[in-house]
Length: 214
Image 1 (tube, one colour):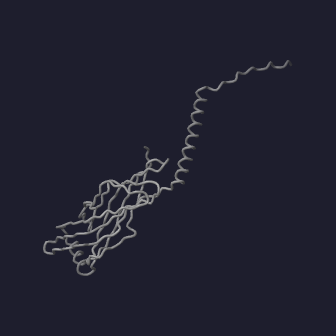
Image 2 (cartoon, rainbow, N blue to C red):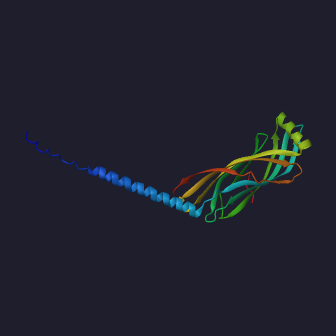
Image 3 (spheres, rainbow, N blue to C red):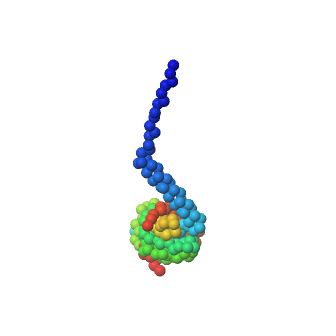
């Protein structure tokens, strides 16, 4: 039986578009790796720290309750502190808005215009907050009478937020939302209370590219 003649096959040539696609993917992968290395190295070199905004101290300066009318007048001094523990960059604070509450009632708003905190420093925001003729329902009236006559402390809550931004080398511009929620029990004898745990919670994303007194 005679041998079969050899079968000739044609090698398929790879489509140039596939080669171009592979080269582009390799370049993108290498770019992502390089950028990742730069970001990690920048983070380790700079070690950015979260800015802080917290209640430093508060004092109830005045509390006048009028039982016949069921209204309350108060005046408080509140010191809010902004801190920047970064050693290589300043932090900008803006859209700072806080609301002072009493037994679920919003009685005053504390705001601050944009301000900067230099590297590794802090800044105090001094507020003198007055609110008059606060209408109280019967439950709040009874709680207020108890505070003034028995417990000698009055409960207040300070809630709100502030935004911050700062540039951190190769990481780009970091933007933070800072949220504050501080419960304050203030003595009626006008003693100042200093707080160490009324600080903010924060979240951030990476991007390119009352009245404030004092």
